[in-house]
Image 1 (tube, rainbow, N blue to C red):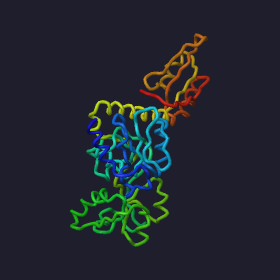
Image 2: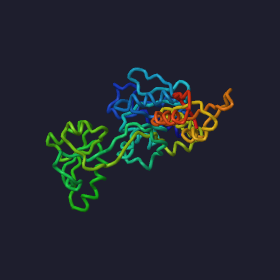
Image 3: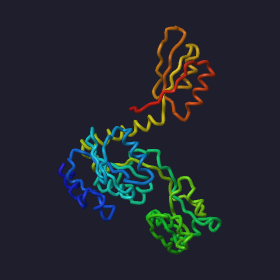
Image 4: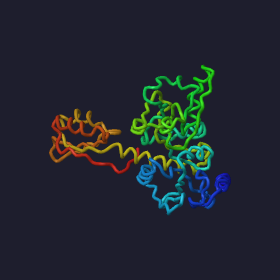
Length: 326
């Protein structure tokens, strides 16, 4: 692991303590982390912070983050969690400073690291749209903003979005970066339009803005550095972490339904609950009855139980799944 050791020493630009980090985006010290551990970067704060912590806990990545420290070794796996600003995670994964990361598709695209990271899976959280927004009723088409002032926290994506319009119209759109409160720029007279994330639309409505175009649709993803995956031990650990996260998310989205039904209705019943691979069918003391257990989508369970009841199934139970593997 000579290359891993060099990488970790190269990253040792700051102390472990947050209050000594300047600027905030510098990587915490990792030179004292054993080389047989993999590093996974997660957001250190923000709207996804608590949900990512719950995800890691559900996947069995148990760790204790000491006060004001940005590095936390897992207790029962050779994995170390590194807390970073969400905007920097894709860059550090792409450069191979960390092996894996959890961040948004918008961050990956903005960092221009799409070809330097492997997206292992969509995590289904933090779904949002990156939109071109303008004062209500002022503009209708994106090309009307070409050559004007755009304020955003996503300057690279904004430039790419307006590049075609600028080239066709022979103008240059002014893209100004701000790190927060983007929605206030138009009301303050600093911008003609903004490009910002829209999740529920509440902030956009409150600022008197409307979306006239989508730049991209985004959600949180699990990413990995492809070069680091060439190491067999690292690949195995990354695969295990991936499987654990996938298993926990699958469990959260599904549940087990178990019920009793007469043999003459078994074919119809199993058509309603085919399960993941196949339903489990167990004979009962009554030779005319069987017990059926199958995995179903949580979002569909109410309708499924109604349909089972309608064909005469009895003792219909929903059982939550804590975790699973397929």
